[in-house]
Image (cartoon, rainbow, N blue to C red; front, side, top):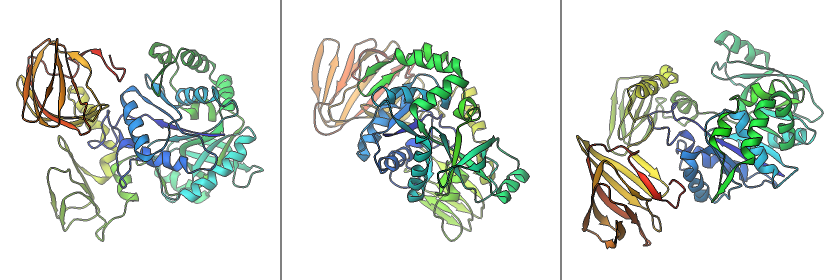
Length: 471
């Protein structure tokens, strides 16, 4: 049976400031109403004879994965939590072991969660070709037929045709070329972009990994053997998995195996690796502009302007710009420089700031909070708690809190007291008090929280009980 494996890692740097570490680009709706992750799982779900997808993601994104699967009605084949990033080869090994536990003859279709594919019929045809090769024991890469000289992708050089129509032996993998080399690749017609998508039998992948990267294979196998189940999640012990070498599937397996194959496909693919690549694949106006939100442009050409919900953006007499506005940060860059946005993220990290980690509005498994005001020794948040959800039973060492309910009915625990707080009612949570807020109703609870104290960081939380496994 065919088991999709969705690799949902990412540090949220390439589409900053819209993407952040706690909400990287795969969870954003960049091309319509659904996120790239949702489009990926729906694409897989439409394949013939397919099983529910297995997702490999970080601890921070586990609830986002579950909620986005539920929102599009795709059942989960399991969510494997990667405790530390170790690149694609160990991540795929975890997924292979997870699937083989219930299907010894499993075939894996490995897909990054953040890619765009516009021609899904062509993609399905390529998957059918790859499945035939996978049944014969090949490890198949999907190569994208290039339509221009791209220097930002790795390439695959195809060799002799294999028995299955449309499949070829891989002659070599090629690193990202300079422009002259990329133009030669395009002219020769035997090179394809390396998409990062693969298909193979799970047991064959582990066999090749054990042959070519035995230390990695042994370490990952030991870590998976000690995994624990928690709700829909499979937790991998951090210390064991961290001991694994970090390497991509390309270097660890595909460049070394003698059974590597490639299926070239033209399917409107993009990895949405930068703001300029999003501009290039989106529908633009007569002046070659892509506008999102409340934007007014006069004498503006070839630009991408994305306004936040909070304000209008106006441009006058500019060309080839990218302007991305969010509640707490705005990016203005030349379109040909957006590949370097990581330099800004690195600066934020170096200065100890938070804008690369979180949006002002932060989503949690119980709902969300929006930091609407910050000053010396105080912070104001708008908190929304979903029906049936509850914050952890917790306490703080450095801050007290005032809660004012705006709508709904909140059940409040404060030390030994448990009471309901209704609209326009308030309460005080003293420093050090054990407290919790729960929504037992059928409508969201909205409240304003005013924090005051010597330290207001999110790490000043001691969780005593938590239904989401965070204590």
